[in-house]
Length: 80
Length: 452
Image (cartoon, rainbow over the protein chains, first blue to last red):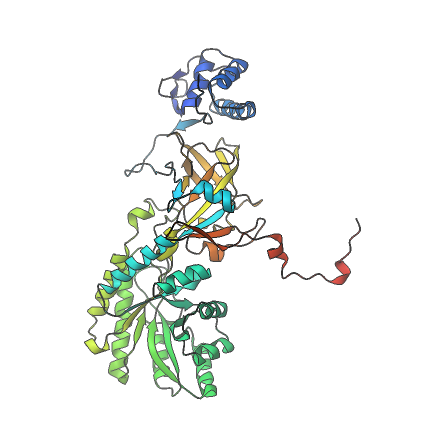
């Protein structure tokens, strides 16, 4: 999952796509994942970080991460 | 190092547009307890989904409404509308508070009798009364509210057969300024039909006109409609006295007061726009007191209030079965209760609260029931915290009509508990089982065996 380079993310979870003018809001976990993605972390690294830092099991991560990634794709925020 | 609490990651597109000047809905606030009993404990003990009724709230509602009317008018009698919720335990709470019974079918009539209501305090309404029903009600001296001329003539025959006069009222429909006019119940006021029915009764030797009744509508948001209806019925009653020297003993204003639910398409929440019972009471009693009755002829005011007395005392607890993503990117959550037990979701946007604490973030969600039917949509759009499988929710304002109109379909109907004034949860109807469902089924012998 590679975030488009020009996507801006604020500390409060506000996301702005300057190409389209669309803006989005993230909840804290969404912000954490998107910040990791912005820092070029791949899915394996994000998974490890999340399992190390959150009360979370592997299946839940996989299910939620895939859904989240699909939504980022739906909103045209990641590179194809 | 302790790990952080996890919540499903959510991203939502921000859309510009007209927002409500009254701010966002507060449906993200958790409701963890009902009358001091934990929702999770109720579900653990009685299963999910589960209807929960608060006895404390029912009694509070009744006392407030009774006080509201009796402070304004000297002769008031409530009759519990059985069709709104005819669980025996619920009916008994209202009867303990002093409510008579208002029924619209024979089985409701029988239920009221079994519940210990004296027959003379069971108002028999509705368009469907068989000759046997009428004979029984007449023999029992129950007030019978005539719906149509066919019933009027049948009652005359029954009175002759019984060899005595039958006490009756007529149901009157009218234009109250709220449209469409509910003109299907009873006799029309404006075209003279109601007066014609009155004349036929007064001129008969067998029927005794004791009351006038109306049922102007349901979820009426305009107290003035009741003022108009009250004035018209009072005018009829005064004219009965003038023309025939007959005092009408009571005027029954029916039901229809709105509960605090929000109708689909309403801009504002029900809690912000629904009139208080005081406003309805003001409208009705002012019309009665200003109608011109001599003090000794003031009629009793009967009320068949249902929805407004019980809707907010009822809750439906449920659990999340699954989350999924729809083709257009919307989030969908499947609950374990559907429209078959939440019939009013077809016209109300019920308030739904999570039953556990969560972060302050919400996401727009379509809420589906568990039925394998496309119509099983509980809320087309609701803003809720991210819910996971097994999380619990509380649906508000389901005390009226949902239990009486719920149907067994695909899934069994849930148990119903009443939380009493001591905070004890009492089962007042058990969870349906396959045995319940098949109890009255019969199998022809030739179909007993199958060979696959």
